[in-house]
Amino acid sequence: MFKVTFIRHGETEYNANGLFQGQSDIPLNSLGEKQAEAAGAYLKNIKFDRIYSSDLIRCIQTADAVVKRNSCSPPGIIEDARLREKSFGIFEGKPFHEYHNWTDANGGRNSTIPEGETEEEVIFRMESFLDHLCQDMTENFVKTSSFTTVTSDDITTQDEATTREARTDDEPLTFNEIGYPPEMELPHVLLSSHGMFLRILLQVLRKRYICQIPKGMHIYRRCPNTGLSGFIFKLTDGKPSHVDYKFVFCDHHLGDD
Image (cartoon, rainbow, N blue to C red):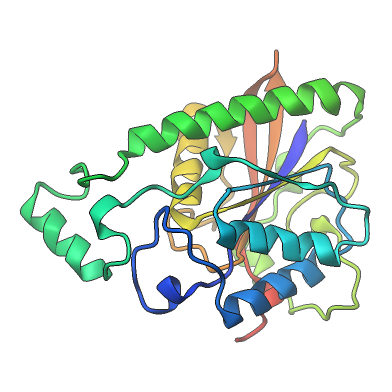
């Protein structure tokens, strides 16, 4: 078993202006930098054994902000193009309404975007990355780690999590507070990636693996910039046999802003 914490990148100018971003390599804007710094402060006392990031600059900047604030000797960032956002082809840099108008005229949102990716293509590279991640964790961490069995009582729902007060930078953080059982000393991976990629990932994990989805977790809504989502992967013969959602779209670190 191992833990995965997924962080969406901070805000960019494309986000702020309602433009499709996809695989356009857009850096964080000033607010996005502040969001990433706040996430780094929030996670500063969490030990990560691996840190993977999309190779697009907004995700690398977000992961780097976490590394710089972390007090637990974090590993280096491993960039991986398989964690990139879905390509929106000709609509990258264009406002959302142009895409919606096009899909209305071309058979709906399942239509293939010119020069873009299909959802099946995103899933293909996503599963390739998951295979790599599970192999990495099996070979380097999981065989030597101990763990406690997860029960339904361990699960914290998103509605319960969001009622907690925002923390200050100086308060220590344990992931039990946003959904991980405190006794579970498991290897821990941070993934810095993108909003649509996360939405597709949630659907893949739910449909293709045995998952417990706690009541109150709204997995289809939009993830906020630097929102955090947590999972516990259980492997059988090196493959995911069970995935638990522990929290989704947690944004305590952003306060009320």
